[in-house]
Length: 314
Image (cartoon, rainbow, N blue to C red):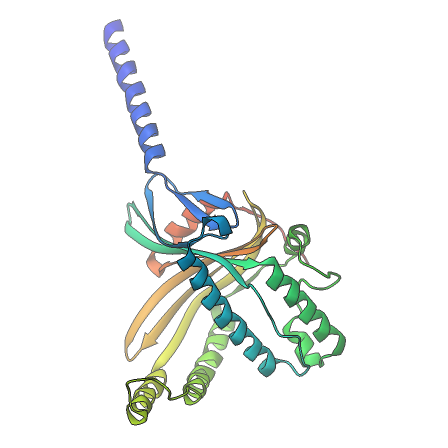
């Protein structure tokens, strides 16, 4: 009997060691931006699809060129929006906005089946945040009440520049919110009334300058798109955000469970996001998946971030 017990104990120890080593071997490390790294669960595989480091010494010439073009477009679009949205002239945004980006495909399996998601991180620079604070101050000092209402939750109050500590303190006092049921239904209905009109308006502004295609052909494509947006509908069953404590410090997380319908076809999906302040700027991270995998990936992100809820402000 003693010999049998000894053999059983040896087998149990060997099994535990094998499982433990397998768990370590299967876990993957993902770059979450600005020096933040996360480790997946043992049964989740992460495959890098795109990665441009926020560390300049880790970039190639091609990476720098991609970032340069991305920032030029971001700055141009942002400044155009400023002109439309606010009644006072604002100093245009310049320089670096996006400081790095990464995209991973993540896969995992449980008793409900196989789950696939896409985890993206975008690094927003301190320089851009400082300029945004300066713009907000101008709005608070000289803009209309309608303009001020658009930035009532701004972090710029009583601040001149962005710091990680200030951002974390602001998030700690943030009151979380949830939108679902009748209120969400009303908001979605209003969105669906506005969306086709706004998209059609944007399509009407598109310049007909494509090389190798006649003006008539370009206009025909635009007309087809304008017809298509009229069939587009958005639905949502849950929107929420809240301040949290993570292994990276205070952050805010939010999730949206949404569906897009087009001509009878309906695609439900889920997006869970984190905004994490760092010394160099703020990292925005999003995990997109089919809605049926929402709970699986929410649990995985809670594991990766070691998420704990905060009470938030009042």
